Image (cartoon, rainbow, N blue to C red):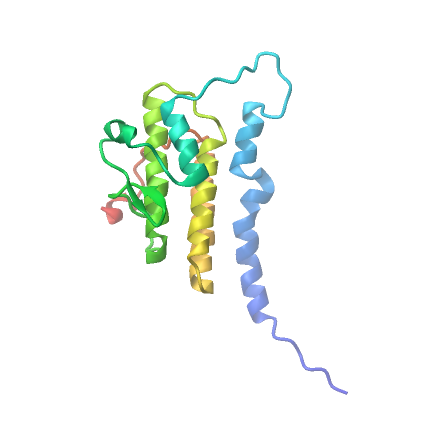
Amino acid sequence: MDSVPVPTARRHRVRPVLVALATPFLLLGTPSAMAADSAGIGQTDAAFSPTTPGPTITAIQELVEDGTVSEELSETLGYHPEERDGFATDPAGACSSPVELPASFDIACQTHDLGYDLLRAAEEAGETIPPELRSQLDQQFYQRISDTCTGPTCEAAALVTRIAVSANTLRQGGGAPVAEEWPWSNWLA
């Protein structure tokens, strides 16, 4: 009885892409784990003393936990967050990407932008930003964009977005996002 060969061309094309995408996480771990390691979280250290979070850090924690923020922060932010699909958003926020992302990501991008605006406000106010907080905002973002997907193209876009955002958070050391100029910045304007 002759056996029928199984097509392997597709498997051989997909595997290198998945390996390339997963390599940074395999080598470095997740951004939140690395931030926790660098902050000494989980280690006993007599010099470590937790601080009471300030109002902006508390607002970010609430955004991560239940998607809301206090109206009191409007003055700090310079705009009034709006609720969309049960989550507070930056109404002028957008998906900052050199490539077009699915429209279904828009609301999650606006919430993520609000979270990053709050991180910047916390830094400006001198509040101590817990090392895992930015990664928690990123994780909420990944979950929400993934939840909007109904097909492989969207799922691939969500995965690539997750990797890009994680790499940027890791590269910037967590904390408040830093404004930078990139070659594609003028494409986004």
